Amino acid sequence: MAATTHTVSNQAPPLAGYDVYGTDRVLREGVERHLAAAAPELVGEVREELAELGRAAGSAQAQRWGAQANENPPELRTHDRYGNRIDEVEFHPAWHRLLGHAVGAGLTDAWGRPAGHLRRAAGFFVWSQAEAGHGCPVSMTHAAVPALRTDPELAAEWEPRLTSHAYEEGLRPAGRKAGALFGMGMTEKQGGSDVRANTTAAKPLDAAGEYLLTGHKWFCSAPMSDGFLVLAQASASSSSSSSSSSSSGTGGLTCFLVPRVLPDGTRNVFAIQRLKDKLGNRSNASAEVEFDGTWARRVGEEGRGVRTIIGMVAATRLDCVLGSAALMRQALTQAVHHAEHRSAFGARLIEQPLMRNVLADLALESEAATTLGLRLAAAYDAGTEQERAFLRIAVPAAKYWVTKRCTPMVAEALECLGGNGYVEESGLPRLLRESPLNSIWEGSGNVQALDVLRALQREPLALNALLQEVGQARGADHRLDSAIKGLLTELADLEGIEARARRVVERIALVLQGSLLVRWAPPEVADAFCASRLGGDWGAAFGTLPHSLHLGALVERARIAG
Image (cartoon, rainbow, N blue to C red):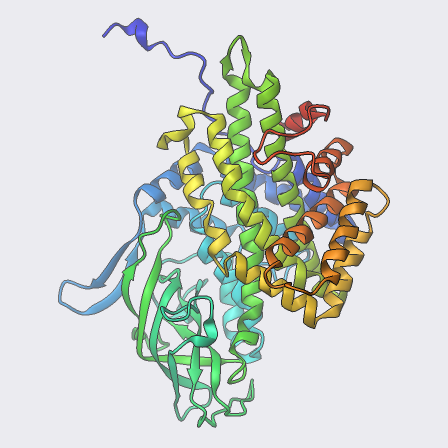
């Protein structure tokens, strides 16, 4: 074949060797805004920390790791060559490099550092754009801390391991490792999200706080981890207690810590039956696990398992928001980069009015998601009663809405690349397969919507905190004011409220995003959001913003630039 037919032209160059953090105006401005308000002395340190991580995330090396980890998914080894049960999961070396870099960057260390949640959230957002699958054990390990803190003795033993910046692969007693990872097992075949229907049984031993578990977990996250928080039904006849957390012996659904390897070096009973063959998230292992006389330590009080583990659930829900926002940002970055370099019909795509409308709409969705995620992380750092009440509604509402918006946005970004985006080498198919995950993980849309209703009905401080938050932007935009009024009308009508739960929570999320953008985003961004998402001047697909808006300014803000 003649060499002249292989001249490559009108193709975008590879998007590699860039700073994922430093070139993201929205993320950078948001981090520094919250730091300036809470810990201004940390601005320089955090900027340098995140820039280093951003350069690593945007490197060709990290992109290769991500591709390799997904092209070579984990494999289950149930037995060794002699027939002994080992239940080990083998990962490609690229997975370990990604996970090791995440741990080394402090992405499991938020609870004890100044501005720890904000800097960790921004880092999670940045590094997830290199590869999203390994974020599961990172998230689980980070989120286990508040549950363990219900038992000071367990927290003293395990928290230093979980927040360590050292990653060591392989199964050994956790006390002999420089750092440890955690997973979680809540759902079972017969119950799913209805965790109170769990049938795993916990039989107390003579030693205080120790039990043997028998049962199964339909979804167990990160089965190669060093320990797991699981739910099981304690016997009502139990009378065991420990010095660090009392138990009434009433039985019921209880939280337990299950180590993979016991202190004496023997393997705990943890039979991995199979790994899930998933739509996306291919690099990460999710398993079905059987317990049969599995040693466990109680965490918190008997019968209070949901209350004990709820701190972990809330923290992982925030990571679902951040993870989806990261996917949206990466998809947007790829779309804008392609449009900058690709020409059609006599002009670059980015200069053409209709493509500019599409890109501006995608940029608007991405900025709203990022801004909301950072606001929630900053609320964790503040730790006041007001902020805790705000998070009670804002986290499930954000989790519901941002994760729902991820899939259509990534699909639209893929379409911006046309056929180039549909082929595996572009990376967009991997993003698209990953995009529905966070809307399912830690409770699907209905679970989140009903959780918001519970907060509204049972926790008046939460509603007051939400209204005070959005009220800070009142009077700045008439469309936002009208949306707030409409939300209050919706909340005042209790008839059929459960059937309307999704509608109510969507409005809460949009009003919250609108209020944050009105306060903090450039005027053209706030104007576009209020006109489209709150004012109704928008179609049913991306790329239907009013043509009179400053669309070019929105696209320019989304470009990767220093």
